[in-house]
Length: 105
Image (cartoon, rainbow, N blue to C red):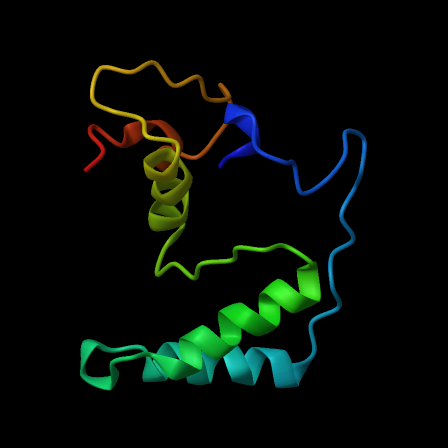
């Protein structure tokens, strides 16, 4: 359950997550996972391994990969159960895709 809906938060208020140092080996792993991620390579083991490694590195329980920033923004909105007609408040200074999703399916 999402923390916003009463679930357990993954960080306490005021915590600042450190950003992991990314090295060339990390970049190669991401590119390899992206190259392998096609419907013809199902299940996408390389992508699942990448998500698992990123989860372990960041300490976050869920780290789904996305093919674009728009898809990454859509995932939490869909996970929160936002439906057409629901109000979603977004920052005034943001990327267009943050507020441009017309419906959630």
